[in-house]
Amino acid sequence: MSSLAVSPPVVKAKSLSCPNCGGPVELRGFAHTLSVVCPSCHSILDASTPTLTLVQRVQEAQRIQPMIPLGSRGKLENTVYEVIGFQIRDIVGEPGEGWSEYLLFNPYKGFRYISEYRNHWNFIRVLAALPEPTKSRGKYAIRMLGQTYTHFDHADAVTSSVLGEFPWRVKVGEMAQVDDYVSPPYMLSSEATPGEVVWSLGEYYTCAQIWRAFQLPDRVPRASGVFANQPSPYAGRTASAWRLWLWLMIALFGITLVMGFTSTNKEVFRHSYSFTPGAAGEPSFVTDPFDLQGRPDNIQLEINTNLNNNWAYFNFALINQDSGHGYDFGREVSYYYGTDSDGSWSEGKSRDSVILPNVSPGRYYLRVEPEMDATATPMQYELVVRRGVPVWIWIWLAALLLLIPPIFIKIRSTAFESKRWRESDYPPSSSSSRGGD
Amino acid sequence: MRHPLFLAYGLALIGLLGFGEYRGWGPTRANELRDVPRTIRDNPGAYRSHYGGYPRYIGGK
Image (cartoon, rainbow over all chains, first blue to last red):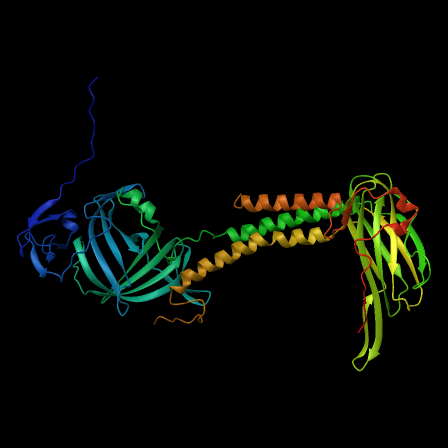
């Protein structure tokens, strides 16, 4: 069987000579090309006539090296484009601030552009539709094809260097008023020259995407800063993080309810005592034993006293009478009140409670050793022991800790947007009035 | 799922604190005692509390 391979038509460039230096000049854009720059002497030539004519003589010491060489071919949006032109646009009054533009050509699709600013890229096509002015959050905005683009900045741009060929009469020193409107990852731009306003739509591309598309051999450079229409890695993530937080809070609330209903919270001991400070004899004593049942769980010891402008200290030991294992702890109880020139006051409480965590089941007793000032009046007090008391501090702590991720994401998102808008005519610290004009 | 780490963190946190609540974990700690002699029941004064024996004054305003 014979194979008839159908290869795509080979598009050949048209070769001419530079009228200034005689060097060879190639035209890749064919009849579309109106201007071409001589690669040898960098003179700008008129390509609309059968023979090239000089428009602008050699540009000053122009030795620019585009990151994507002229003649490179790359696949963007499933179409192969060839780089046929390159220009540098500087911002008037801001030396060193400017961007590069590459003119792409495909014989079937026509012209497209890619722009580069600090290694942020945009794939751009010129629009035929007329945008509709509007407002968005107090800023100028443009509505087009159902999408609102917020005004980002205004600049007077000047063409400072050109290479290759162009479908318009390009000139170094050509001025244009440029306005950018953003709706990441898209950017709508208007470029006004005397008698003409051109609207174009750019879509953000990363350096890596451009490098892949044009199969550039160099290492992918790193973009610096946040670009006007760079998509935020946090876009939509803040809202979804808060949604997830809400679901987790519902789960936490559910667990809290279950814990509340299932906690035993059972009184296992209650007894009243009295203590006379300075009395002869041993002040310490042990209580009757009581049972702590079930799984390892907490116990709560409650101390209710009749202290009145006085204090007491209790040395406690909760001891397992079978294993000799126990817990030693102390509690202060003090209650004072009175009146002075500021009015009535009170300090402390006549009751106190403490929770001992994770106490194994078994038969326990309490060793109690009260202390008071030797001259104090006798104290009546009651000790109450409860088993399996709910400790809500964990729930509050969990609720608090669950707030960390969404707050963190919100802060990062805000910082990203703040970085973006710092580069605009509407920096976050200033008012929403148009500041760049 | 846009936040797998947050979800894992949240579930781990809820699980841990739920388990802590179930086991009666608490923010307070007490000195653990080992092998307390059985004679303490008969002679409580023989035991010396870790917190005892210090002069104290807890006064009011």
